[in-house]
Image (cartoon, rainbow, N blue to C red):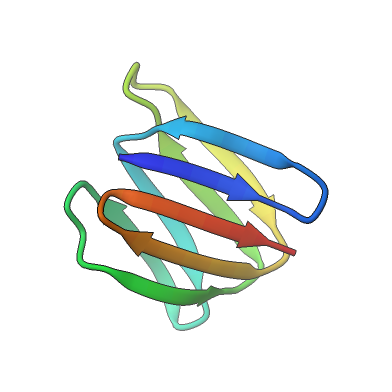
Amino acid sequence: MTLEIISAHEVTFSGEVNMVTMPGVLGSFTVLKNHAPLISVLAAGTVRYTTPDGSDHEKEISGGLADVNDNKISVLVY
């Protein structure tokens, strides 16, 4: 599954991941491979993701939008 974290100034991350946890406005949620399509507003918090080598990563955001479709996750952050 592919994750892209994008701000107005740069692409913060683009690559393969095993899972992503995001701070939705109604609570955190996790996306795994073959997740159903969704669009969600994100609250301020931490995007956490695990890469195929098993490394855990975190990115603080002040809000944004997430789009999940066909094993591609696009996170647009403020």
